[in-house]
Image 1 (cartoon, rainbow, N blue to C red):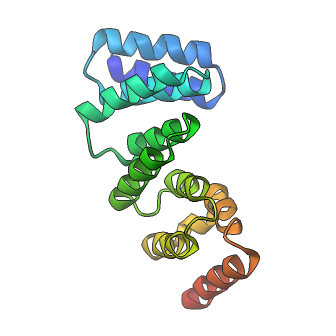
Image 2: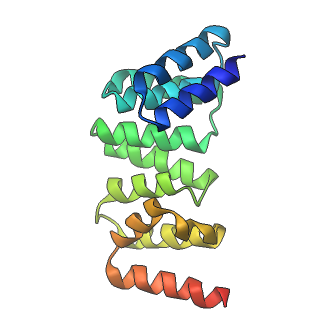
Length: 166
């Protein structure tokens, strides 16, 4: 079953077994060549292997099959960032956040793509993510991103959220 191979590939990727992840994901695509999730996973595996050209090709293929996948758009933003194309990294990441405002990976990409470039945009994005999902405060990626916006802002946003919940 193609989805089983896609899932096994994702599991091995998460465990750091990239060669096995690659084998399972390629097998999945053999069985179902138009599986957007398998293409997205393959893009992530190639990114982890340092093959950014293949990562970009498979991620774009995934988005060709499913253009509104916020996770694939987040991955695309990360690949563009690694390729040094910050404008496209930013565009992909912002589109991902439109579709899924509380996506910690996209927020992390946004903060690292912007750097200190536009703090008001970063702060409003961080606040909007919290409005959509309070649980994001349990996500380390989000907390790290918040901390990059300055201690006072991070402390303020966390305490404001805590007082709303009481």
